[in-house]
Each structure stands twice: as C-alpha cells, then as structure tokens.
Length: 246
Image (cartoon, rainbow, N blue to C red; front, side, top):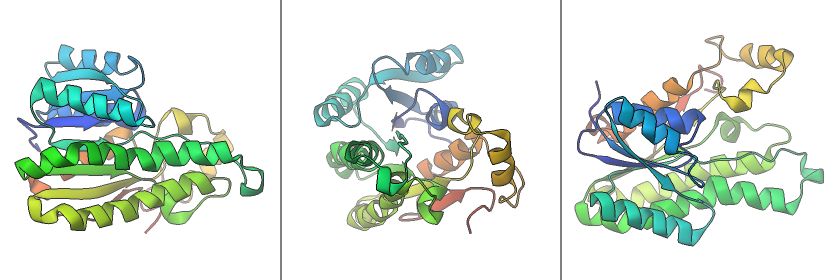
C-alpha cells in the first residue's frame, strides 16, 4: 500500500463526499490529516479517523477568506511543524444559464473553487520551499474538460485549476514540489444523489465503464500523487472518470 507515513496532509472541503474519502485514505496510508472545513463541520471526520487508529485533527477554515486561510495554515504548522501535502478540494456549484446567471453566483464559485486554491497553495509554499519537498493536488472536474450547459462558472473554475497547476508546477519543480490535478467524472456523492433517475441513466450511458465512480476511486488517485511513488509526475491531469472524457 502507498505510504504517507510521517507526512502532514492539509485537506480542504474534508467534511463530506470526496474530501472526506481523501482524508480517510491519506490517514490510512499513515499521514497526519488536518481535515479542513467551515466551523466544526470536519470534527466527525477527524474523530472517526482517530477512532480507527489514525491521526487527524479538525481545522476550521473558510477557503474564501484570506485571514481564515492564513490562520488555519499557521495553526497546523504550529501544531505539527510542517505541511507536506495540500489537497485543494473545496468546491461549490451555483448552476444557471449564463444569460440568467447572477454576478454573485459567478464570483462565489470562482472564489471557492479557484481562488481558494491560490490562497491555500500560497500559504504553505514558503514552508514547502524551505523543506524542499511538497505535494499540491487540486481537484478539478470532467465538467471543466468537456463543458456542461448551465455551468459556465463551475467549468471555468475547474479548468482554471488546470492552468494554475501547470504554471505553478513549473515554478516549484526544482525544489522537490509537485503540483497535479485529479479530475473526477460522475462520482457517487450527495450532489449526484440529487439527480433524477432518468438523468443518472443518461449520464451512465456516456461512461464506457458503465457506472458512476466512488469517492474511494478519487481518494486512491490523490493518495498516489501524494506519495513518493509519484515523485516524477508534475503538471499532470489524472482523470478518474470511467472513460467519460478521453
């Protein structure tokens, strides 16, 4: 099994869904996990990890607030001395056709899905540069690659992460830091559970593997990229979509 022993992982949006699965998988691989979410929403995730023999703390974080990001990173560094892995997973949707989309819904999605990755990555980068090691993994989406009606804000934010990743990867590669993207397709989460049965069937028909993925499928890809096994991989997009987009 991939080992993350001795590493500290800072994971945003860790209270449920894909973020929760990533936190659990990293912890099972030996990492100490800072499960980040608004208020105390990630406390149950951290408690469950500890109860199962892992190491985790819940960290209050609003990824859209610069001071909150700075405070959260500082508290994790003070507690553990280093951060080795950052997973920028926090994300929201505010779907609407472009001609009807409100400016505040555009801004909210870009702030949470894209600008937050800039803030969190920047906040840990100086420490990673000093230790000459780090893993930054940004969670994108098949929607960013293929587009989807009513999701111009979401698609722009998720594909924006790809450009951000590749530029940053070139900036920091010489210092032992890799920056990559995991791009999930249709995954079984609360978001997809709300889809009608007819919509689910239509979407599944577009997936060569013939089914939705699981949060564990995504977490496994993240854990691999966070490990030493992926030390020679940077600036890449690892699609976890069952062949939905090739």
